[in-house]
Image 1 (cartoon, rainbow, N blue to C red):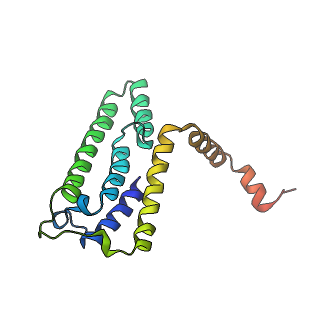
Image 2: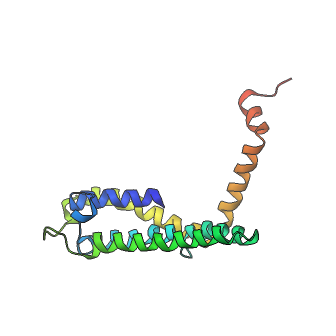
Image 3: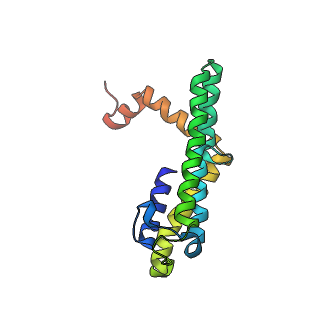
Length: 165
């Protein structure tokens, strides 16, 4: 999710000519797909279902409530609210409000090949964010298997060093 937001920031920088939020704007008109693709990782970061960030937030809040950690649960939920506030503020300023210099940023400054090379990874990560949110079980099983291997590295050591006699 964060990698996707960095990729979006890079494309916005190429189109608008900078990354300083007060110096960019009007990207929705010139790059509506980029604006939509920004919403997916932004909402996931805040913990909206059915995106991948929802499960992380849900499990954190559930674990806190299970041990009666009301303050931790409250902080986690508050962070989600602050995150969505900051993400909507960024979206509004970068995409919705007009450019402060009155210029119209153009996605057309990029060739079709460059545009595709920039937007395909962003779209792919956005799709992956939705897939993980909708079908988290395979990813949870993979994470559990990885954690088990980290806790007991015997199989790894045998694979690397061979059987020790």
